[in-house]
Length: 301
Image (cartoon, rainbow, N blue to C red; front, side, top):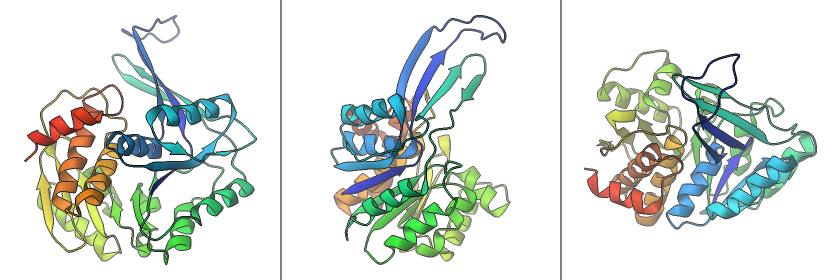
């Protein structure tokens, strides 16, 4: 089973306004509601690719109930913990001459809620996969990733981590199976500006020296680089298409990579499928669909 954890899922209300004017009544010309959260995006792509997956995390209020319903609509299982105080977030993403985001704060997560999550994680077995991705709400201690990985470190669970800076660096000692920084995040970790693939590869290997297994570095339109746990380096470009949506593209790449690896055990194919999945989401209004992913896979060399 593949499990994902989303600590602060949301409803993303995406609206387009022609020439938004502050202080005036503005009317939308286009609007969509998506189920947001990095782990949910990973589960959705995995479900699209035919993999069984269960989403874990915290929800609250009527928005939480809708997120739970959305998981069923998107085709994956969920075992969300319902917390008492507050409500799951609504994030407003305004697309106009400039893009603006207004993100909600989410519910208040108590120690007892976290204990319930740990109880769920204790049921994960040897051979399962766990994806930890995204930021941590203020009501949870920022060492939560470390505590989870320490708890699971001797259970034979492959763990993928998609996080930034300290959240990522602090878990490397637990040897995650996969990490996926982008090239800008990789540079920020080491306080440098990266120029070209060779520098990306060099600093990806530094993350391996600190404990990471496979390091997948996305580089937007310049493709991606994978440094495998065996030390092999794979480079890949991206298929042609018009970018409509950057939200969820990185999560889709993680999901596609995991699906490709679990299906074949081939890191080269995993990188191709990850790139196709990430591109399919980038070229769509929402999460990429399977037929589109497979069409793009044929274009990738």
